[in-house]
Image 1 (cartoon, helix red, strand yellow):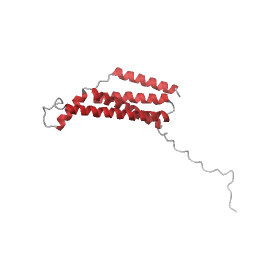
Image 2 (tube, rainbow, N blue to C red):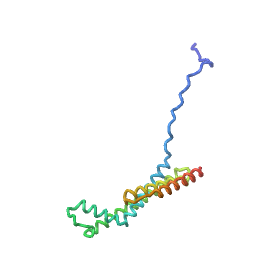
Image 3 (cartoon, rainbow, N blue to C red):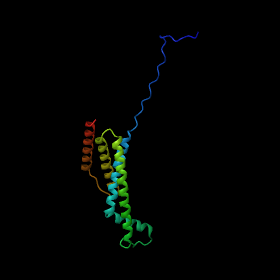
Image 4 (cartoon, rainbow, N blue to C red):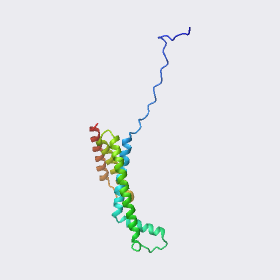
Amino acid sequence: MPEQPSASRKQPPTPAPAKQNPPTPRWILLALTSGAFAAFNGLFAKLTTDTQTTALATSLLHLFTSDPASSTADHPFLVLVIRGISLALNLLCNGIMWALFTRALTAGPSTTKVSITNTAANFLVTALLGMVVFSERVGGLWWVGAAMMGSGCIIVGMRDS
């Protein structure tokens, strides 16, 4: 007869599973992406009506023509085309932002947390786009205010838990 294991004999301990960082919840990625698309929506809305659009059209005109004296006054259609493209991108970003935001609301633990994450991402990406695209200066007081807003959002989000 085969020998049966006795109760006193201990099995070797099974190794504990390695601790892994939990994956980022899907709603966070959706809310952050939604906030970024909201910022791009604002960027394209501004490019639809801003003087920067004329400067962009002038730059493109100089890039693609050999006449250095040509200006957007000679080619007003180019400015309209760029404004039309900006408007189309504005509407596209707006649609994507709302689609992602509603998915984040569905997947998230609370509407407060999703809204706070979305707003924070929108705020920061808007500031970065303003600095890069429009050469806006963001001073120290702005960053202090942004940090206070972010802290308030975190406190409200923690209270909601």
